[in-house]
Image 1: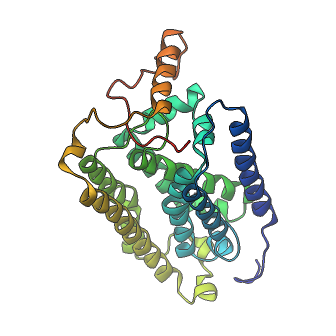
Image 2: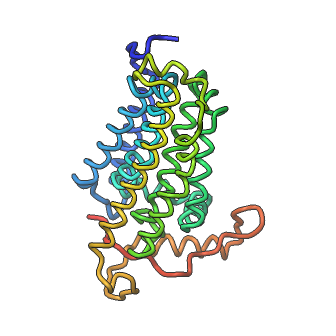
Length: 307
């Protein structure tokens, strides 16, 4: 094993990030050229997207990625928190709207997102991914497998997207939760998936043999590193999610919890509802047992993308 802070350029990670960013940028330009009603990528969205890319660099390259893989459970927890609480929401807010609409249009993707937007489903999914990726055998395996580390990082971003979609509501055909429901949902997401934190804090002995060298990396014994990781996980989830929920609740008005016919309709949302009905009537099936049902609760509302 290398020294804790031995320099590693992480060439594969950089190549993947550059390719991903290039595909999104070029895809947006192509969609603008071919669309009858091109959508502009606003400066605000570009900054959000740049923030997501920067957060990916911090989480997935030297030194945090090396510490998270071999040396410190606290570093691993911080890496996962960055992916879930920073990369995922910034990516959701920063992707060009036409690219986001194109990515989520396929029937299977739309069906999965439409089902995953339900608070109970989202909480279960995020809990399974976050807890499952932190059990000792998985953490032990990722220390010696770069592909597994990449898969777990991708799963963390996916869990983050599932967590934030009901809150941000930027995906066509999926409306944001009402302010009070949104606050309760974020409170549940702050508590339920982080129950593993109590195990890390209260365990009388280290659970992760792979981080037995934490003393050399961060000057903490493995047990202390594990306890701090538990506190960091729990407190960060609570502070970030409750702050977002409380801020949204404070800004809301009583009328926000009621359906208002004066709110402008987003054409992409209406179009997505038509596509769902068309898939249903055409006899296509999604899932093993029954066809996907269109979202009949309401037609989502929100700000239309800038032309």
